[in-house]
Image 1 (cartoon, one colour):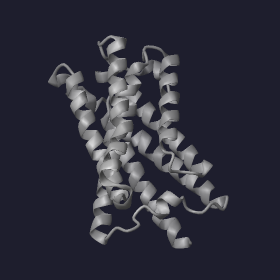
Image 2 (cartoon, helix red, strand yellow):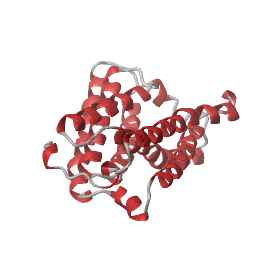
Image 3 (cartoon, helix red, strand yellow):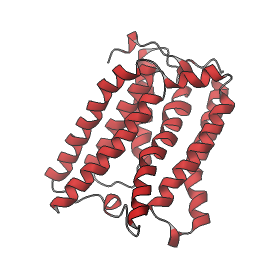
Length: 235
């Protein structure tokens, strides 16, 4: 990936001062980190399930979108969030997302790890309509909330005007993305999250927008759920 040839557009070239971008990142982090805790306390442990988890991402996404509207100074700025070279970037990155899933899930199975407890119990206690709704929410909502936080508000803290800082932004956001998925225990799954975080950050920097990372993230959810179902048939 040759970062020198990448032209950053839209939110990556924010004219806002660093201190203001840090404030927005801090507010976004507070929304992202505290959102699930607030909803969890309101719902209660006895009523909590994957449907509530997915729904919480929807509430967080809505709050982050509102914060984004406050940050952006014009409609053209919001439109620039789409990014450039969307089709070409998807052709490049979507096969890589599939590849890292196949490699890491293959490692997981090949090394004799059982399925992750989180995936085993993902739809526990849900009826068939609730499972379908949960799948749809997982495909749509976490990609929006997580990409807004990691690949918009947080990545803008870094001065993306040099190759070094671009790689720092990629590695830091990828590490945070891996750590935030603390529901996983196997090292191949954590490696998967780290590699996926790297790909999402690279796509964000290359396109200068969020559409490609969001579509990649949604595709990753579909691939992950599909592979989890396939592995479950072998158990």
